[in-house]
Length: 57
Image (cartoon, rainbow, N blue to C red):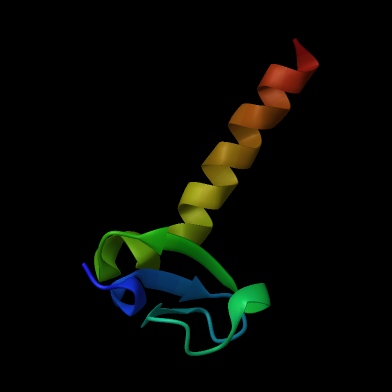
């Protein structure tokens, strides 16, 4: 996979993007494919909930 071939989720446009279209501050990733990038908000929410549970213990 070439350097610009990673999938990202653009938080500004709320959609997956291939490469760095919108700039680093506005993206989540990288992800291996478009389908996974599309699930980025769900993945981030689950990771945050897991980290919150860990912090509470």
